[in-house]
Image (cartoon, rainbow, N blue to C red):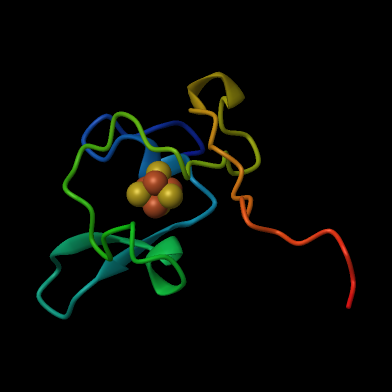
Length: 83
Ligand code: SF4
């Protein structure tokens, strides 16, 4: 059982709001990255432990100091005029 603290075998995914623990019928445990559903830059099942990730967002109770700041997505070619 994992408490609100980070599991060193899993890394950041264990305290990330995008990480979800998945257990199969044989008792094997995987960590699903839900960001992979909308962003192909993330693996569905990342290699563990994850030590740094630009998409990390701390779950309630997780240490914010482990967060790696993400680059905000901005379109460089955004047309400011409205046609
Ligand atoms: S965003 Fe990064 S830290 Fe969060 S679940 Fe996905 S791979 Fe893990």
